[in-house]
Structures are given as structure tokens and as C-alpha cells.
Image (tube, rainbow, N blue to C red; front, side, top):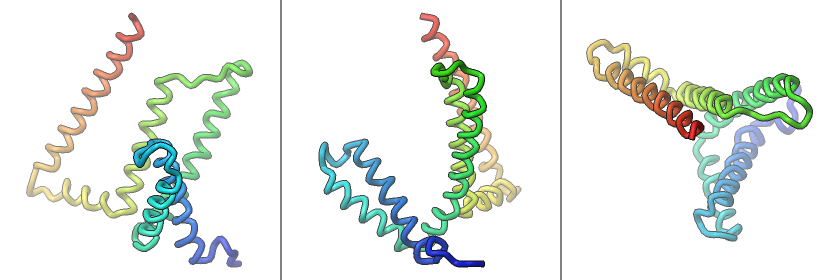
Length: 166
């Protein structure tokens, strides 16, 4: 296999994760204005420190480099879905309904959570906790969480409908 500059371990495991974390952190700090309005230098310093800390911990960069392909494939699949769905609309009238936004957001959140648990080893821990058989508390907690999520979905969807009716 031919090694290019982008596939070298230095770029793949150090430079690209640093740039990604730096850019995302800087953008979040700029958008949220947590450190103050118009504080680009402060935001840049904090983003630099966060990026360097992430790169300093090898296991974190491994997780990032494992998650980025899933993100890329998900974005391409989402783009293809919306491109095909856009054919059903008249030119200039494409609109994404609230329910579709919630479904896409829920699926995206589930994929990110499951992928993160998988690459951090958390999924194996949860499976072992549930399958241990000696303690039913893990299964009970899982059922309580599922019930709370189901109630939140029902209450949230009925609340949205009642606001629409007004």
C-alpha cells in the first residue's frame, strides 16, 4: 500500500485529531460566548489547550479516529436521503418537517452514543452488567430509563400537537 502524507501516522493520529478538536471547540466557544463576547483570542487559547490535551492522550485520539468515519458515512447517507427526498418537492419549496427532524436527530444521537460506547469499551461493560444474572438492578434501571423515555416521547408529542391546535 502506498503511504501518502495524509495516511502517515503523524498526520492521521496527531495533526488531524488536533485540528478537528481545535476547530469544534473554537466554534462552540465562539457561538456560545461562554468566555465573553468578542473574545476570539481567549477562545483560541482555550481551544488550543483542549486540542493539545486531547492529542496528548493517545486513547482519546484513537476514539476520535474511529468515530470520524462513522460521522462521514452518516453525513453522506443523510445527504443522499435528503437529495432523493428533495425530488418530491417543487423547486425552492423543500422543507424538512419537525417530525423528520426529530427522527433524524434521534437516530443520529443513537448512532453516536452506540458508536462511542462501542469504541470506548462501554458497550461490553453494559452487556456484562446486564448479563451477569446475579443482580437484577441493571435490568431494572434499563427498564425505568426506557419507560421514562417513552413517557417523554408521548408527552412531548401530545404537547406539540396541543400547541399547534391553539
